[in-house]
Amino acid sequence: MSKAFSNLLKYIDKLPHTQKEQIYQWVKRYVDPVSSAGGRLINEMRETRFKNGFECPHCASEHVVRFGKNNGRQRYRCKSCRKTFSDTTNTFLYRTRKGNEWITFVECMLKGYSLRKSAEIVGVTWVTLFYWRHKLLNALKQMDFEHFDGIVEIDETYFLYSQKGQRGITNRKPRKRGGKSKHRGISHEQVCVLVARDRTKATVTKVACMGRIVKPKVESIIGSKLSKENVIVTDAWRAYKSFAKARGLEHYRIKSDSGKHVIKGLYHIQNVNSFHSRLKKWIERFKGVASKYLDNYLAWFLFVDSRSNESTKQHIKEFLLASFMYEMTDTYDSIRLSKFTV
Image (cartoon, rainbow, N blue to C red; front, side, top):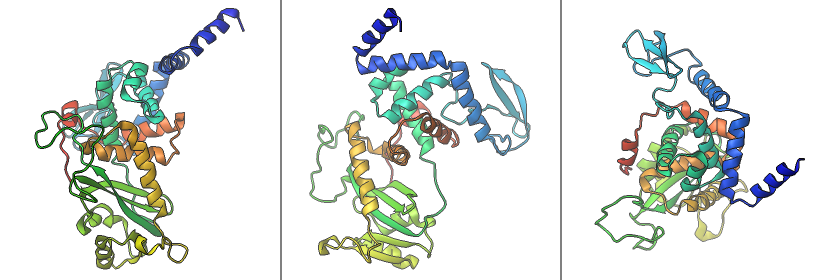
């Protein structure tokens, strides 16, 4: 090792973590240039998206022909609706030329870096990265599965309703660091998040309503994924009892007041409660999440939790490929002006 290189390493070792990360990303891009790293990923996304053949994103017609190139990217024309499109139309990468920056940003997301720290590393403003984050997550939260297997644990957790980032709030005083509810226990100031998880770790986690969960919300969120072959395990809340009775499901209720948390050595809600605990701890890093974006963060957590919160090349690729597979037509304005609905 040369003396100059040895001195360089000593200098780098003294730098703050963010600057070390910047150097790491620069070296990685130098060794694996944008044209190869970003280009390969775009090609893989393209092949995955159109694995069953080309289909027009505007009218779903399969009568598609090549229609020249724009900025080096192939364009296509639909012979049915006459509209043109590219590989990235109606995806989070539409109209972006920063393929490699997206890869770096997803790596920062999976490492848990803040937007401001990520902005220094990626070389894009933190405001832009905020919208990138939600474009990715709006697509990712469309990931789904058909049905649960076997025993399904169901329970809810709560987050205080938040209007973080909204200006001109007049109906209450500003809160500091999230604040506290004015009411004791569960109230309509709290957002209910329903979590259902089977023993294979297939999981649904979605915003359900304000305040206590009700039977129609349980039905609308997980009803289509359950059959009479499933056994559900819940706490003693009456909405679950009504839901199970109406669906004819075998149902075990964990009554915490009795001190018994496991029935027949098999039926419990410990897996879903553990999921709640990890979710709460993970979401603390954001120092409050606007309720209108909560579903996005739930999808993000579900992805990283299923991969043990590890940031690897494979997980980065999986995150981008999964997000790319689903239609995403949101703009910066539609994200910023979105409203909280349940």
